[in-house]
Image 1 (cartoon, each protein chain N blue to C red):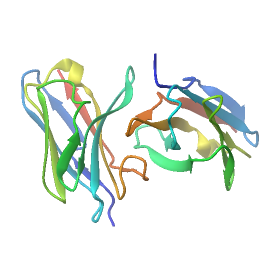
Image 2: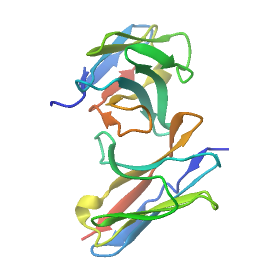
Image 3: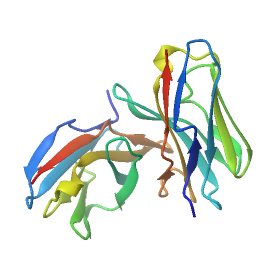
Image 4: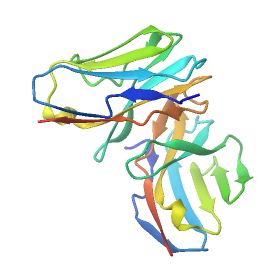
Length: 109
Length: 114
């Protein structure tokens, strides 16, 4: 069983819509959760992190964490074509950062 | 700062040859990570260093892989002998405070083993 699960997508949304990206994890002891964005042919870059249950907002991005359900999500409001990328969820587990395989997001103009 | 620097950006080699990938972390970062990314397995941590000391190499796939960090500004990942299944993008990343601190990734080295 994979420790961090993501739907590979692609998730296709029209420009201006809300994109919702989801991630589940298996380690109940995980405390730190990250979202990295990776454009095609480029390296991952951190866009959000969250440690506590609830929502954390940063500009158009909102990270949501539910530790009881072992679920973390990323919402992107007013999606832009420039948001088209692969989004990697990463979760700490036994002092290691485990990455999901990523969800590819396509924002249609 | 120039960010994490990796060389070469692309490497094409033949099976059995030795391959050496290089990384210069961001100055002042105490942690350095080597990752491998493939379509099948995603992004996998191979090994990481703290203050030039290898801390966890459990992700290194086999003895053909070795990594060194002789000083705070340079690290190498060596594959000897290389095999076609080693073809992947290899990323180096660095951070101030460990795996759960913001990791800054280099541009990666795309390795093709024929």
